[in-house]
Image (cartoon, rainbow, N blue to C red; front, side, top):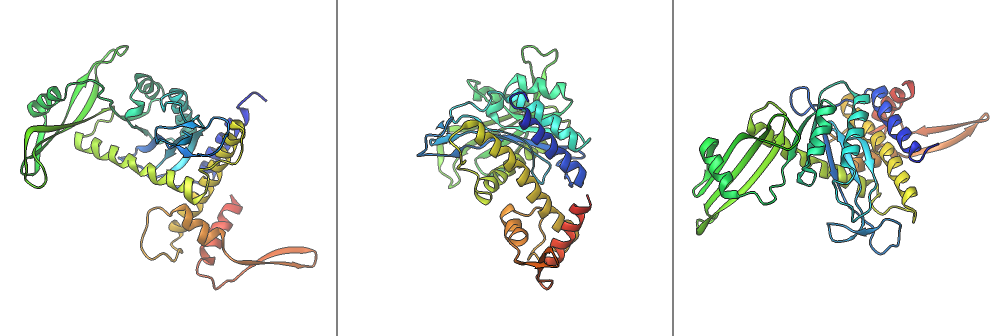
Length: 339
């Protein structure tokens, strides 16, 4: 088999599993499903593993990329990268594959969300070619903040959260080399004449945030949708801590890459189990939740006590039927077994 062939098989089968089980995918805006793509460095300090190098988080490790689908955060793609590698390296191919695996899971429209490290025309071209909408935070680089303030004050909508602070939101269009028409840009420009304690500033503070987007929604809606992209940090935390995958086991880069993909499958299975317990209404949780954390699923469903009984040449698992989580466990098991 060609190099990387097993990787593609694992990712395709994981996507097919989500489709076969009928995993619920919650949209973020209308029918659009969020496809959140981000890099989250793995700390592997104190090791001499292949590919471990200095990351932007200022420790030695890896810089894997992840793609999460739906509000539930199912993993559709993951790629292990060297720690020193920039997040944009290989991103167009990774993004194209992530959209392709997402299409296996669902036919709903996709909304790709990327941060400023992936502000690249190549990513926009991929989204256009794959017929996916996007919200990509722009890297202002050397753009003049005073000029953005003028644009915002002239054509934006102003609100004043407090005295001395004005926030402008609105939209404009900017040209990019290689594109026939200007692309829509949503902006949020904040001007502070005094701080939160009322201390006047010698010169106003100007803060500018802008986003490329194809979504035909109001600027405030686009900004709110991008802020929800931050939820992916919780998914990173579950992979690193709940599943204890941050310090990868092998000294070989290819072996660790395979471990990461197998972890992707395990993560999705645990996520499906947790979401199924919510849908059944049998989970004895203290409050209503939209998503169960991986750690809770492991503790409540995977670590459930049982006995191994050997009788009449058969091996049986016996659970305590009076356990609080047993009805939910049984329902989920029967559904998955039937599928």
